[in-house]
Image 1: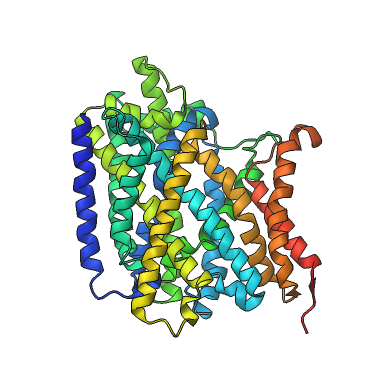
Image 2: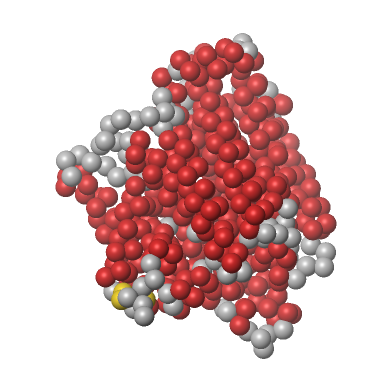
Length: 484
């Protein structure tokens, strides 16, 4: 498939998104931008959240990583189910009862201003890095297969994508994101299913033979029993549970969509439905990984050496014909946009509400608030551009591993803050909370860097997030006192 045809697909898809944006942004205001006027349909939110949660990391990195980690990633997905249940039964009722626009307002009400701003800061840090990693993996693939051939520099490719994303989200916000995420989820899942079908046909596999291949493959091993491994089952399972709580339940981007539903009951239906569908979709992505490696072996091809993230695009674009290439590009673009559109909206909302105090600025009229919101939106877009360009210069590993490694450090303080606020009634020395939240990740980094020498070969996995949250919780507890 020629680079010209690929870029034509990108442009056509973008036009469709702008059409959706036009239809959903008429008569919008700041309330529409931040919480969609609390009128979103729960089933649309649930469906759209699949694409937002999967992103380009799952689309490309998870199938490629099967060659190294087998199905061990699924241990974490099983943990997600319990984390999502906690969100539905504990966090969502809390957010709706307090009628929150920014979920970090809970920290202000419960712990104080410094705790509130610290929580919002760690969300912004987490989401900027996470969104950058997710968008990077997709844009990098298009750079390799399209824009390098045209001599376009990587930074300009990223700028083009971010400009398009910024253009269709700057006005509509959550009200637009709910619909565009649903559209993007559809194309991403279509690309996944068609890819599985096309590779199965190339390998002469019917459904029964496909399932048999997956079952017999050594790459389909899910559970890891070696306690020293980063993929040891308890590490992955409980790490996955708390990753779901932190990266979804304590994340303004993901919760902004949930609290845009009409009621807490609808938001809970959304969460339970979303979690079950996500379980199935992730399993299919892992099965796709086995098919990709089987295809490489049967055709005598070479596995990409720089990173296994390139395996899926290499086969889809160069080996399976024009239909596969077309749907892969559409799926890839569908994975790219949710990586940044929701992030830009949530980052803008958090900064405007949590740091600029939009809800308390009665002297600012709607026009002034909108003007400031636009400026913040552009500022975060440029920040994403900078992080993506830097990340490309230093990365040489599967992005899915990098993503969760960073999350273990940045979401830990959020986990500790919210758990302390929810589980205790103690009052805190609010001004000292930021220090505790900065020290906890530093201690975790020292432990992680030296665990092999200090703990008899033990290697931290995703349980590092739990430890990070526990250190934050304990530090705040030590500086707290019983409330009277």
